[in-house]
Image (cartoon, rainbow, N blue to C red):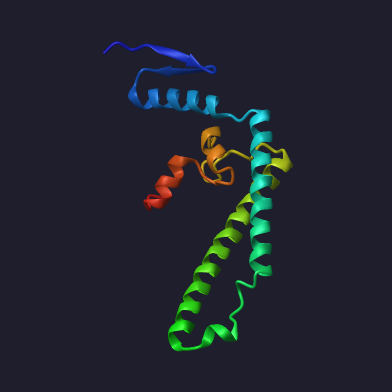
Length: 153
């Protein structure tokens, strides 16, 4: 077997398969580093999502979606229907509250300007602009998230 190597960021990488993965990972990491204008755009997206979630919560409260009217309690079937509707609304509100928490966390990371926004909280690897553009509040890289969902970590 003929051996050869190349230098990536000052590191000699031989042609062994595991080291090729290192080379690929280094190249991907260098490409996925967020630029200042990308972070600025993601911050604006996060702020808009935050405004939307806060408005939605305020509208739910004003519309009285969390209250049961005596008119809704005419019989057991109506009561069951109203309770089911209310459970669904509460689950949606919980989901929105969780998402708002993640959005707030992401904005704080950006505002801290310490370089932690855009890095996987588990591995420290870059999450990548494409993934953040779709979900700018995510905590984990796609690979780690998949491993987490499959119970591998």
